[in-house]
Length: 85
Image 1: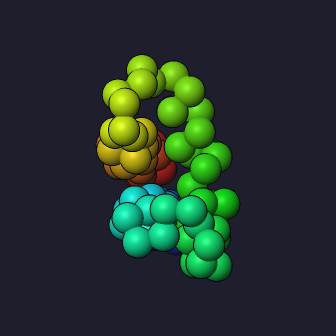
Image 2: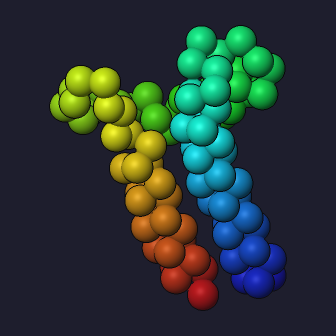
C-alpha cells in the first residue's frame, strides 16, 4: 500500500512541476493566454502560483513565483514521501 502512495505522490508532484514549467514556457509563446493549452495550464497552476505571488515582493517584469513554487513542491514531495515510508 505504501508503494502505491509513494508512486501516486511522486507522479502528482511531477505533473504539477511540469505544469508550472509548461506555463512558464507557454507565457513566452502565448502571453495573452489565447491557446487552450495555455488556459488549461493557467487553471491548473494558478491555485499554486497565486498565493506565492501575493506573498513575494514585486520584481518588476520578473515573476519568480514559479521558481519558488517548484522548490516548494520538491520539498513537500520529499517530506510527504518520507512520512509515508
